[in-house]
Length: 483
Ligand code: NMX
Ligand code: MLT
Image (cartoon, rainbow, N blue to C red):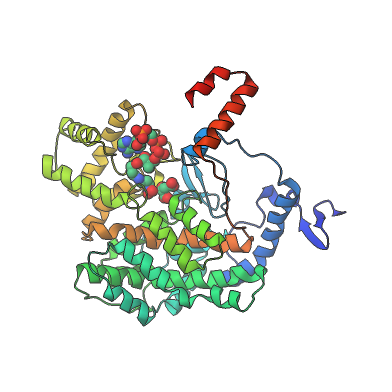
């Protein structure tokens, strides 16, 4: 039954807004944040977005988006158009867009909140990722205030962190600490009391806000325990923003470092939903595991050397390089060191990407910061030179899909410059930032009622049977000998 041009009833008694009724298929208006807090804005927007989502499923659900090859099944699902993501989208050449805005423009437009700062706040970035609206200065300040209110970490969690052996990697500590926060979950409380599915996002939002608010204190406690014999503050200061508090608790309150941290937190926040950390959070979240557990799963994935840990690996590799050939080696010496790494069967950390096919704009934005603040730093100089040399070497291998630097190639030397020297801690910073993206995505997964994820798997025998059948149909019978 058709009610108006843009509305259809698809299932008995339930009205769904049709896909065609949404402006450019995007729904909602962009632009500046207006009246009401972030949650109030979401409460207004979500019913409409849910209608759109259900409308798409209902009216267009059988349309085909892509094809699945055997290589996709056995090759890490590379490039398969399989996932849904509201918060960000990746273009293989231009890099990541947050809510339709190129990252460079997001960085330029986010409101500068603290006096004297040159960078937008992660608080504003979270507002943008969750709402799709560019925050005003007031909106961004409101998030800072909210996180200050919510940021105190329960004693039992700090005791758990304090009890951990220093040999436990800081990322493993972050996974444990975020999982142990799960008794705080408003989602679990509401679910146990029988909350309506339509309201799940509200409790997920509460958990996301609380977890993000607590993360700087959790991360600083891990850092201070592992590297500073437990010294250092665990108290939030109302005068500082999220990054300011974090840096002070790390014992690194210098103004430029806090600005670097604001930028770092914005740059690492989100990279659509197919990367390991985002997908892990989403996957676990679809089982309706609470946000603390889902985030912990995400961090277990970020801790791998092919994903977030690569920023630690870059520094390990650069340190070896500087020890072997010094701070100012010739191009030939650099090329030989790179060759030796490859001959040893290792990858060059910080280079290559599963999706990107050009220099990662997050690398470029960090390099711009470095050129402004510390262009004479030997590490920065080396990383900048490598940007030209490594791609030449990798191209010659004729197999690397993207020979250019990714986000992880740069962050370490900047952190070193500002005296955050402990490499094992670097991925924790990435994790604190990634919380902004993966938890924004989780709020939207709950808002849109994303179902439990359960793809079909095949054994190699089944794949060979499939190939045989396909070959028979296309008349290439002799191909079956290959299986
Ligand atoms: N150095 C040497 N070889 C490489 C590199 C590299 N940086 N990148 C890719 N290759 C090789 C790769 O090992 C593979 O070789 P083989 O066929 O012998 O197995 C071949 O090139 C084709 O791989 P790709 O299709 O280019 O890359 P894939 O999508 O499989 O993997 C990465 C992407 C990011 C895992 C890979 O480029 C890599 O290992 N890079 C170094 C680690 C890194 O920087 N990771 C951080 C990614 C960003 N993040 O934060 O998550
Ligand atoms: C990320 O930021 O998650 C990485 O660049 C990895 C990816 O996108 O696959």
